[in-house]
Amino acid sequence: MKFQITDIEFDFSSDDATWGDVDPDYQKEITEETIGQLWDADDEEDLVEEITCATGWCIRSIDYRIILS
Image (cartoon, rainbow, N blue to C red; front, side):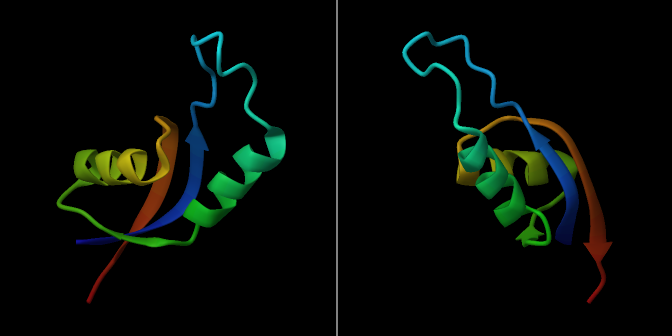
């Protein structure tokens, strides 16, 4: 199935003291690059896994629409 992301919130918090705070401009860039993008996935769980692997960040919340062929 194809999914188009309409809204997403990443978990940019880190328990790792070496990372520190994540730059707000970087957070905005990653979020904006993901919104509107089309993703191939089997279901919502697979979609979350695909985005997490591609961006390197866990997802707090996600909204999407399914694109029918």
